[in-house]
Length: 72
Image 1 (cartoon, one colour):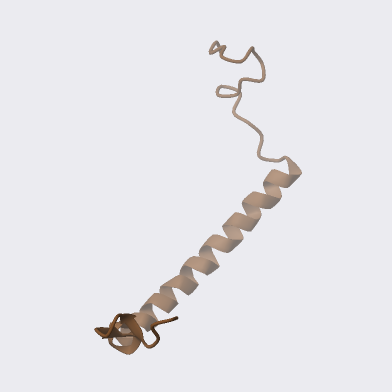
Image 2 (tube, helix red, strand yellow):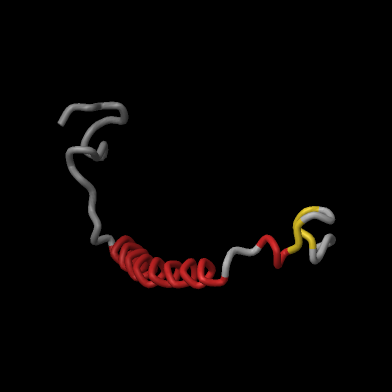
């Protein structure tokens, strides 16, 4: 912020360094798509984990044996 409106000292302004308007609109649109897709999935994963409904794979869990015991 100390160099406002320059990104590089006396060479590149913020307006000159910004992408084309259409590129910025597409980036915002894809960010929205990613947000709408990812947030519900993460919330679902968090809720299932908090309820303890995810469980563990008994083949990869070490709870049945001693630490370091790789027997099935």
